[in-house]
Image (cartoon, rainbow, N blue to C red; front, side):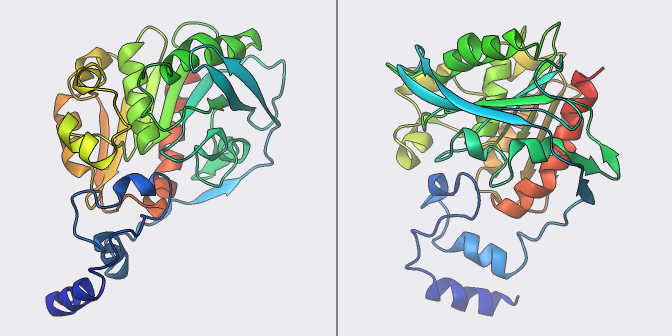
Length: 302
């Protein structure tokens, strides 16, 4: 697209500041320091076009959903546990803990794709290593503790023990964590705070803020205070991931790119980083899901 045409489109779209980016976590990007309509412009001129890796699916395994009262969150939360093909209740398997994006819930860690179907992927013709998956409602507080609501405590002290009672995630470092957008940030933070629990982490387009002021200006509910931001700053505490397999993927046209760059600079040596063409949109999320799950499988199913 020529610069003049892009400028004309930009003028025509100047009033569309409320447009949400397609896919998980879109609401958090509204007026996020980018020009109104930029995300739509990126999609028009191809900046968000991402090739999808060759993926087919086996018959999905079973899943179960329900709810439980979370003492950490002081409310009932929904949850799901999904099994890979050929497995079901009673199987002893590695476990992926999935964290949903802003505005989502336990059903939508992979967008509209059910977790059991995601586990049934064949990537480049190969079925993923057998792993179970669990997710629960974490609210909109960026997976860090708030007064009266501790979603991270819910995951560590309630969701994971429930799964382990079912034979999932038992043994040393047999639990991985995964998320997209806010969930990607949460997955990294969870592994930083509890490296003794997790054996690998994969984050797609993690919503990394560069300062408390930036976060508060865009999403006032993300952190309870400046002190809370400091405690839950994934960049500051990235050294806690030393020795843990880490994969981070983000698009060059993602509004969170500066924060992701800061995170990448802080990650310990050996982290797998994929910064490539794409935006904070569904095409990038979908394209990065197969390699992210394959990465977790390679490290958890040993």
